[in-house]
Amino acid sequence: MEPAKLHLIIALILTLITAVYAIIVYRRDLMMLQQNSYRNERYTRWINSSGETTRPARIIGCIALFLILVYNIPFGITGIISSLTIIGCMIYLSTRRYKKPLVMTRRAWRILLTALALDYLLTAAVWFLTGNPVTMAAMALLAVVASPFIILAANWLLTPVEKSINRKYYNEARDILASMPDLKIIGITGSYGKTSTKHYLHRILSEQFDTLMTPGSFNTTMGVIRTVREYLKPYNEVFIVEMGAKQPGDIKEICDLVHPEIGIVTAVGEQHLESFKSIENVQLTKFELIDALPANGLAVLNDDFPYVANRPVTTVITKRYSVSGDTAYVASDINYDANGTTFSINGPDGLELTLHTHLVGECNISNLIGAVIVALHLGVPVQKIQYAVEKIEQVEHRLNVKRTPGGLTIIDDAFNSNPDGSRMAVDVLARMKGGKRIIITPGMIELGAKQYDLNRELGRHIGLNVDIAIIVGEYNRDALVEGILETGKLADDCIYKAASFNEAQGILTSIARAGDTVLYENDLPDTFK
Image 1: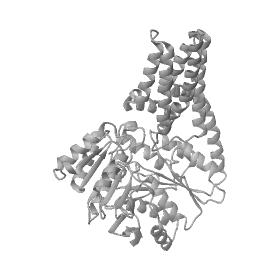
Image 2 (image 1 turned 45 degrees about the vertical axis):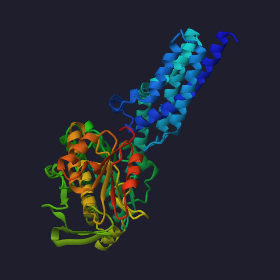
Image 3 (image 1 turned 90 degrees about the vertical axis):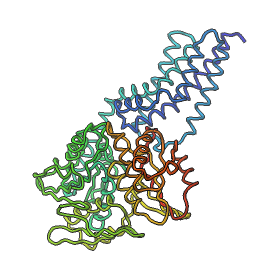
Image 4 (image 1 turned 30 degrees about the vertical axis):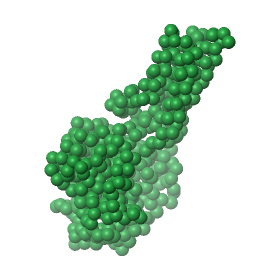
């Protein structure tokens, strides 16, 4: 066969293989964009800090591209090698499993198809302009190697489209809410504790009212809009809205849509400092909910956190609570046992409400107090509150306790660790008796300049309260180990280092025995090592 014809066939095969490979690569990059809330600036920061540009699959792609462009090596050889290399990468990426896989929403489909269109159009344009099939194959491979930038470009190009679609959905949700003037809307926000408080409040209020809450982590403006459009029914009486934020203005935007009349602030802490920069900005943003309440509204504030306690509120009725402090509502007589927790809520006018729950940990007691205050305000009878609290189920990955057939007690606090919550989780582990107390953690993330110091402080708390520590990943390893060793209570052979949660699980299997308690504290998303 003539060399030119052979080169054409190999180039076409290589281009076709690369076109299929592009779909797999772009889906993976789109997953990371989705985990960064479709925000190009956050996705760019992640690319710069994650080592994404030097991951093996991308380096292999660069090597394949280099081989194609080396003219003194026959293209018949380099083309075949490159094709086989790309097929190997395809198999590798196709078989990988992620903690938070891509959700193919309509927006995700639009970005993926736009990215592929850009890729294929660039490849076709190069062939049209040069007429060289080898150059065409090189362009196809270059587009895949540079896939994060193609995804960024696709997302940027679709900005006007997304704004138009979002405005349409926003107006539909606004009209639905306007058609239900008697609907009681309760907003819940906080650096942490808001999802648990939402679940607990929903369970209690459902004893008295037809109640809807935003599902899962639908705590953005678009998540609330989707809840209103798809789940809110004319017969609902109460709508509980979880409000999350990654930057100032996010909560105000939700409030401008739903107009809550009751607001709960569960915490203001050092969370998401990479985007907020300071705890003062966190406070400002969380209190956007309270500032949005009407004159006859109610603010329920958790004064266990200094940046909640020191924020005056004079525009609405305010009820402050704490697990232990000088507040109108406070917890007392807290007792843990194998069946959960018994405690009392003391409040104004001689209120002394004794409750039993299957939940454990002061953070859960705190979340329950906030929910109970709102339930009492809305007239839910005490007996119904006690019954509902008794029946509340643990929220998955939020300090829930379970026992394995092998006799291990598992404390699952794997969702989104933070300085105060992680400390409380370690305190719960410290209360466990009878066997070894084991923690498995990669530490905490998104803490900005305080990342190292706060993880070192967590390490010190671990060193003082547990028997064995398994540190996962490299991201916070040095800080955690330094903190643990500073206490002088945990020997080196009681500190294990694991590259992944799978490896940590293998270590646990080799050291755990019946009667031991294991705390899973945080689970890093795919955007972190």
